[in-house]
Image 1: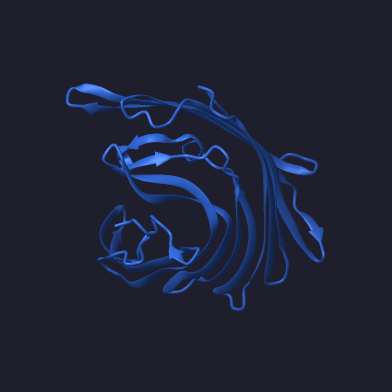
Image 2: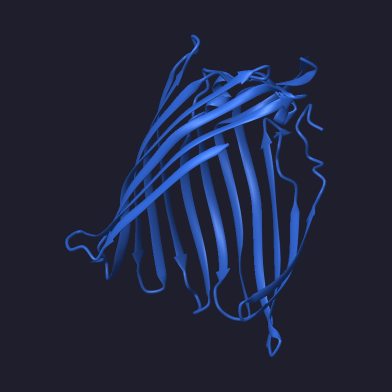
Length: 322
């Protein structure tokens, strides 16, 4: 059962340094019960709210180009609890504040983008568990160049910090949704990712799409590691930290094959692959390669779509992982 309320409002055409402001808020109260026969075995509760205020700055001239951007603040509060036979996660509250700024400088054929975000995260747990406070920051810088009217190439760099979640800190019990006995570590540190991404895009013409190549190096990557032991007839997985590396690619292509009397016929091709390693071994729960093919026929207000996806077997499994 879920109750949810969303709110959004904004102002446009303001005078001064900001041309507009937008406010968004959401409240949610969610619960689900997992049954043992006809009886409730475990009850999961999640209540929280989030709000965000973002101000859009007025465009201004800079270095012979045009500077656009926005600044904002955000808060998120969540109270989570599980009760019953499979209550692997104790009650805890997450209170997170964040402030951010994003800027874009548009020059002749070149766009430079930058962003910065600071977060203060407080996690309070009941039952004698250790409370944690995290102060993290993330930043990004990138540029794109339109070498033809239809095609562009982009290169970006980012440094991202993520605090551990309540599951990673406090789990202690059978989690049947993941078929494992999960054990958290309330001494975990935030993980830090250093990423580089190269993108090639075509926006106009009969064939459009994008190719993305990326590499991410993690300091203190948080991962559930199989210990080889069994608890409650389930494999034990303990959350630990280690340096890790991800390398991946994504492809999305769309071909407008025909704009005929019977409608517009479009074919799509998508593919993605990623490889994650840590300490010489494959990481657990890494998605295998996927390829997607689709055909779509559109006419007036009617649309017919056929799609097929092939997911390869995952051969590069972590120790103890099937």
